[in-house]
Image (cartoon, rainbow, N blue to C red):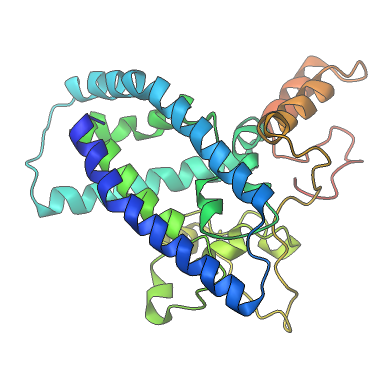
Length: 289
């Protein structure tokens, strides 16, 4: 993304984030709810900074790859209203599949897991970046560049959609009526961050919940008295919550599994790329994460 576009997104989003976090903090104080802790908030912003640094390092690479794909396109649509409308839906659709892969393959889950490791759920949780995801995220958007969409526009739309995604990380907003039918709302995303059995791997979309409803990954938030309260975080809580552990603990788990001497090479590869919690002997498959 060029400097002008980056400044545009920052200009819009920064005041919004300051306001909504301030309101959420105020409500948490007034209602005596423990929505924030100093340590968790520090982790959220630390991971955001690390993710931003990785994104900065990969920006030239991602733009170069998308530009190369764009140079091979045989069609370049005019930047009309429908161009932007299609691009918004297309970026969100492709990100849905990136997100779904991040929950269905242990290799990608190892990158994504730190976003789910918080046991709190507030607006700053949205900043809890998957630090290494920028290394490959842009590859999921190459079909759009091949289709003739400008690389700069692809990255701009993704950044703008992220604003909405961050704003869905809160317990202070209940249901949003008819918007629940097609938009991802805080209610939907609370389910996504739940470690309850019924809520695992549900509601993967960032902006349009229609993808989950169409592809079978949707789950409505259920009243606590009907099911159980949402438990945020991982099904196996971390003992070590240092920043390096948050980022790399699943990689250490993968390394431990592939070093096993009682499995063959095929099983070693399966430990890397099959679903989180997969086991060659089925003994350890109790919880997905």
